[in-house]
Length: 340
Image 1: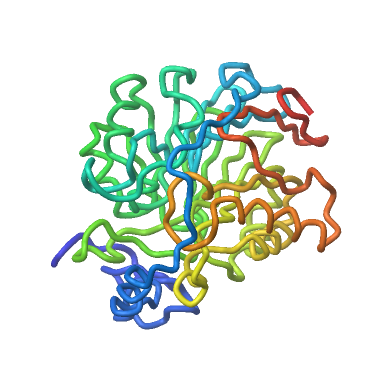
Image 2: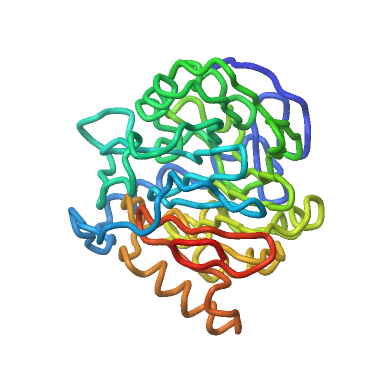
C-alpha cells in the first residue's frame, strides 16, 4: 500500500509513524502488539461485564454559558469528547455522538451511556481537534453533522486530513508533533503521545497520533488524546509550560500485557499529571465504550485511590459526570457548575 510521504523524524521514517524510544524499528507492528496475542485476548472471555444501558442523573451546568475571562468552561460529553470554551473560542475534542464506534452501524462497541449532551444542545463550534484516526476518536457521521451545522476549522496530526475531508471539512490543518497553529487569540500545538493508528488492517501507522496544547492567555489546556505512559509528559511540560488544566485518559488499560504501550492506567495518569506539573486534571476515556477488560467503574475508583496515595488535594485530579459542565480559571481551584 502506497501513501503520502512525511518529514523524516524520530517518530517517522518518511512513510510510517512510530513511537520513539519504545518503537525504534519502523517494521514493528502497531504499538508492538502482534495479531495473535490480540486474537487470543479477544477470544479469551476475560472482560468484566458492563451494564448495557446507563441512565445518568441530569447533568449540572450549562454548556452554553460564557467562560470566565481568565479561564475556561469544560463539558464532558463522554469517552474523549469534551466541549471546551475559552473566551472567543469554542472547541470540541474527538467528538463521537454515534451509537457505536465502528466502521459499520450494526456492529462494534456500543455505548453504555448516551452522549452527555446532544449536538443540538451545544453552542456553535469554532474548532474541532481530532487526535488520531481510531473509530472511538474519529467518527465520520459525528464530524459530518458538526460540519453541516457549524463548518468549523479542524486541527489534526499528519495524515488525517483526507479522512476529515470525507466528512465535508474544508478548513483542515495537519500538524506534526510540536508544530503550532494560530486560531484567533489562541494557539494549538500538537504534542507527543505513545499510541498508534489504523482504520483497516492495511493502513497501520500511516497517520500520526497526538495530543494538543491549547493556549489562550492566561489559560493553558492540554487535551492528551490517547497515550501510554512515557517521558513525553515531562517534555511537554518543559517545552510548553505546565497546563492549568490537563485532560488525561484513565481507562481502557487491561490486560496490561497488551494495553500498557498505548493506554495509561489510572496510576500512570496520576504520574502524568505530576510530570506535566498540571494545576488541575480531568479524567477521560472511560465509562462509555467497553474496549478492554476492566469493570466500568474501576478507572474512577483507582484514580481516586491513587490521588489519595500520592497526597494530592481532592480537587487536583477529578472526573466529571457525563454531561456535566464546570468552569476553571488559571488562578484558583475549580468549582462544580460555576467559576472557580
